[in-house]
Length: 135
Image 1 (cartoon, rainbow, N blue to C red):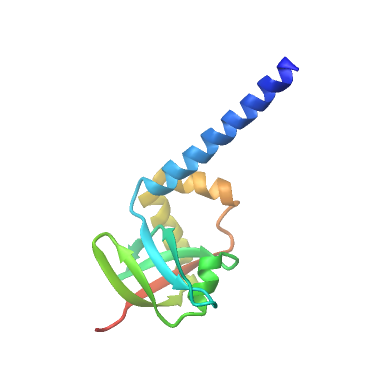
Image 2: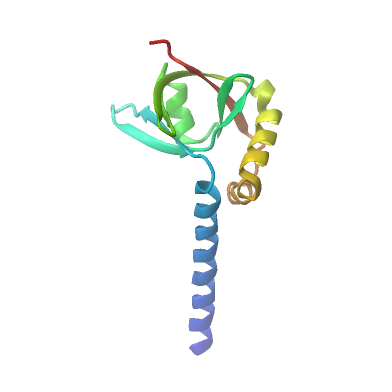
């Protein structure tokens, strides 16, 4: 019985370490807040990484991500980046995905590798170009 408790303790300890590492990896560099609306009209805030390329901010997301599905069904959305809040539109520009992946890896360093291991790779990622709405 003592060995089973040790084993359970080790497994739980490893799970806490891995979970903590993912939180540290994902929150230690710039994170934006994406505000989208569900079909029921409820606002959902998603924290995401962002990079800049060719005068645009870019997000990276998978087709099966709930936030990406909400984004695809919206014409515009709100994004908070630092002290700036604004409405944006988006375009999926997958011809830029290799560059966006490289920029994410450079900006978020080891955190990008940790998150990639947790989610299983970037093969299905989309490069999402953001354009600010004109006031």
